Length: 149
Ligand SMILES: [Zn+2]
Image 1 (tube, rainbow, N blue to C red):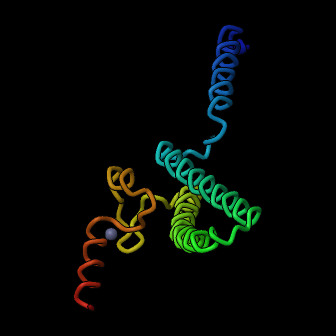
Image 2 (cartoon, rainbow, N blue to C red; image 1 turned 180 degrees about the vertical axis):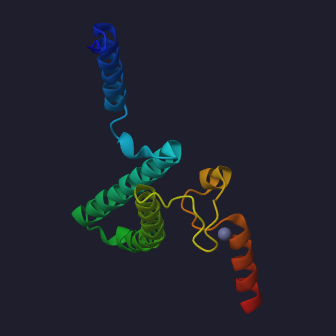
Image 3 (cartoon, helix red, strand yellow; image 1 turned 30 degrees about the vertical axis):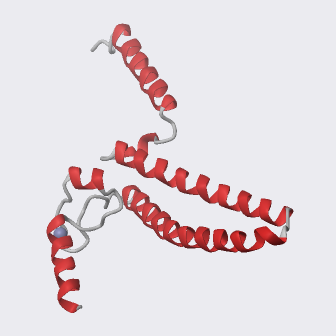
């Protein structure tokens, strides 16, 4: 009869699984879905949070304006509102791109050029985490856009 795995081995496996559990608990936010690009995911999530915080501040700010309807402040309040609306439009687009990038990470298609299917180098992803094109395809696209007009 063959001996069962020694007690030592079992307890070692238990210990290492404990270590693993502990580690994933401390980085719960990223979780096991971190995949190939954990730090880029962190960048994206941080950027996303920053945009949402800023949007929250804009809303709070607008609340202040409505709470103190001073005639002399009306004009500057409107300028302010237009400005924040423009920012919000840009941020909304960026937010969408960030969400799409995170979705691609979940689907494990992140880092693949959607035009040629090649790998986008890590360096490019780190510099521009929401990109969907490799540098060659991006350059081609820009050249085409320039040629068009
Ligand atoms: Zn490409």
